[in-house]
Length: 258
Length: 258
DNA sequence: CATAATCTCGTACAGTGTAAAGAGTTATTT
DNA sequence: AAATAACTCTTTACACTGTACGAGATTATG
Image 1 (tube, each protein chain N blue to C red):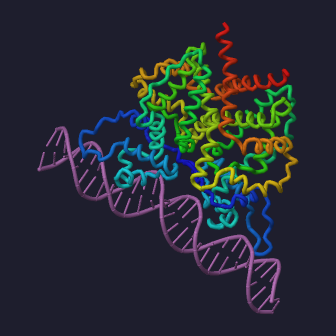
Image 2: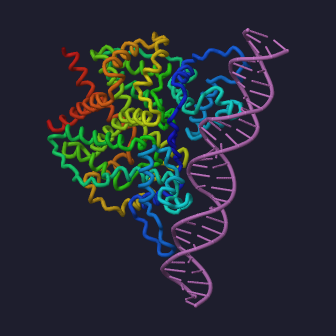
Image 3: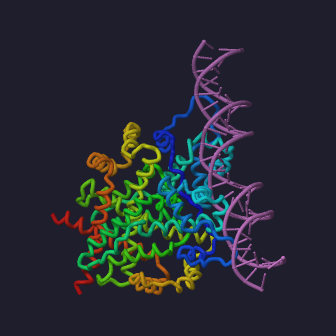
């Protein structure tokens, strides 16, 4: 695992590709494929077979060009990954919903909504959790997602910096929280064994361990396991989100009180 | 990036290796190296050169055995990664500090403390953010870390499940929040270019963009950039942590009020 | 028509994880 | 003591990766 992180490519070139700001070359043969075709093919591969299936060769093959022709369009794989991330941050094909209008009075519901949407995004494209970008992805779709997120915090009396840091906090929580569910799903798909089956398999070994160095964990662990089947990720997510909303409420209320 | 996730190896074998429960073989030559040597070498490599530098060949070379001898000791690379993760979750060599005793009255400080320690852990071993495990890492050191984390929530009147979900929430936030700092540092080390320099490089391009689709972001972005140099991650972390503590306080207070 | 720009491609290299099979070493069984 | 089983270590090999390099092929401009 662990993608290449280098990316010697000109940072501006990446942005130009992401924003479609590469003007069509005057001379030379016409391209048989567009950058968007390559990115779409790569995303399809990643969605279907995981990020490890995305190699420059397979992407090239998918659009019908030879392995090295890939590099005519995209400088290196790190750039492809950036393009993939921005691409999937946009609305899915056929999704024509308008961006919702957020009423400040309902801010709790609004924040919960964008948090859940963000979580759903990662569950749609779990490979996005595995790729390491070298820089923030400043593409049009990523910006729209940020805008969207910010909207839930607008007109609550927060300063610009507070708004930004609030978005960052919620997004970071979601990112951390979705990771484990995504992992479990992917491994289940790849190996056919669910986490529950795995727990069952290792249970005999776990019983042979000495838990005296972990008194608190020894008290908590079994109860958690018994009560809701080795961890209900949806419930844990909601729990954390509620606590976060409570925390934000302290700040928001202190503003509106004035 | 994106590690192999498969891991066909017997799940129990991984646990046995992690807990040192492989009994010394009766026959055959003595091993020239121990599993711990391999893991230590791998961690050293990852700390020094990043996770991409960790290949089975280089690890084998580092301990002085041939490439394939690696597989005599560790079934596959996914298992090595699990072992690495548990290894670095333990106290660093020479760290003999006692585990702190948490006084419930200071729970805010306690939770902040473990959150910061967890963050420091990822900053010490940023590659830990990049590796994908196939299952939860149930090693002795990982368990001790969980125990430690749980301790900060003990005796606050929370149920077992609430304690577990609270730990999960804080850990998830930290994980999400540390990612970006770790990325920036690693890329700086690898490419010599800091995020700030990168922003400066792309600024001319950014000025050519049309921000009308992003009205809120267009208002927030520049202010945030101006005010604290393109994002101060420490400050953003503290901000989020304060909100989370406020949120936890609502729950904790409701318990102690009774 | 020549030239410069561009796309496409074949070959090549250094690296990856690891399967398969053999050679050498040790403890147990005969 | 000899044979065997269990074990470590090693060599060779395969399919795969990202991508450097250089050779055509194609197109618009001088």
